[in-house]
Length: 93
Image (cartoon, rainbow, N blue to C red; front, side):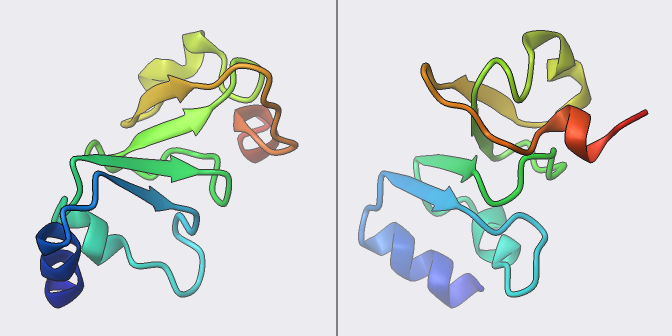
């Protein structure tokens, strides 16, 4: 993971997008090194990852602003976007 992070940093990647979350095959170890200036979790895992070094690309329906305290990520709210999965679907109670 360190080698991959070093390569990403040396290529001066500005935005690194994670679509895996904690699903099989994820590369959270690469992201933990924070190789890109902006790192965003998007679509593949719409719950909090517990990683404060990520932003969460989302919409106000999937993750209403009042849920922000339950997430370690900062919300990057995109207009006109709707996910079929979200906080209510992943955390029903």
